[in-house]
Image (cartoon, rainbow, N blue to C red; front, side, top):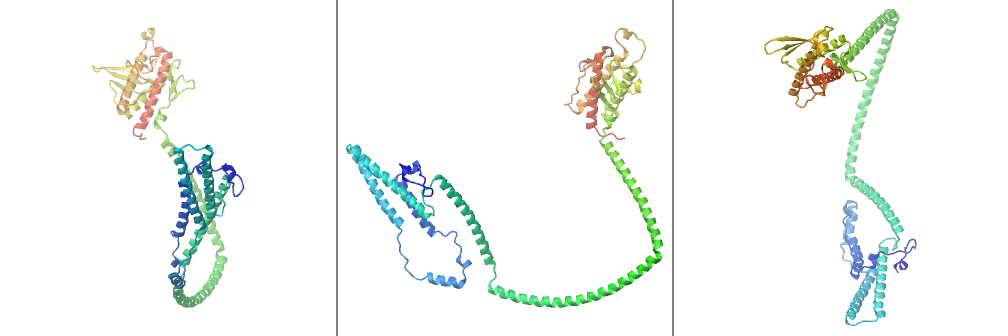
Length: 465
């Protein structure tokens, strides 16, 4: 039924009221009506944002206003028609409540016919529709928009109010700015005082102008004298140019030639300086350890090499001997950098004929040749030769270097472990007679040495060349 009673006052579309409006009791309806009266009274009495009249009204007019407002004039009495109608509605609501109470009491005493119970319900619904109509009238009287409104019209109204609010804020800022300018404006007394000051300043400027004019005349006279001197100097310069032009040109050519030679020498010095500076940067960034001992592996990752000499099975003996000599030299360098004194061994680097001297407990020395020869020995018949013993000794030396690194850093660990018997590394035998395994063992040995070399280059003091 609410759909057919109320229509939008803007577009005429039927408005469906919310269920909460239809279920309002009489106390809530009275609260809405009286709330409007309280809002009106508060809008009249509130003066929170009112400006002080003394800030912008002249004093004489303000005194006239105060004298007029201090008179005992009886105020005009008027009656608000909306409030009177609300009072009548309150009486009707009270009658409605009394009727409802009587109807409820009657139901407890005796049963009434169905037709008599419907009459109070229709009366209550009509009274509620009337109260809602009055609420919409109150809303319409407070604003320039008639109520009720549909959802679309309400949304347009909200957007319009937002736009008006922004415009009002801008106007407020403009008024406040203008008011501030009015406050800053000087009074008539200040104007007279400033006028006197301006007259005095004008007199001072007049006197200053007179002195400046006199000074300008003196400057013009000085300028005339300087121009005269300039003409004399120009004449003298012209005579000098005509008389000494040849000498000047010769001197100019000589100076230009000397300047060109010095400029070329300077450019050469700059180029040499840049070249030496670049070379110095390269030397600073160069790792002397890897330059002295370059350990690499071939593309097939089969053979390892040190300083270009390969080490492994089926490599010619001179190249193997040279590689072993480089390894002895590398170990000699590492023990020196790590301040390591080998136990029972002494390295003797002699290129392709390097040796390891072994000291026994009875002060007996044994020379182990770390190179291969074509000499015949009985060991070859039993798949054993002297080079195997030298290589096992070499692994023992590497193990002592590893122990020294563990003293420096307990968390260190080589990529390939050396067996306790010092006859294999990474699970591969270091004996030459093992053939293919020996190639892998040599590669593992070079990998460990390369790792130790890199660690030493970082954790020790730089080498002085």
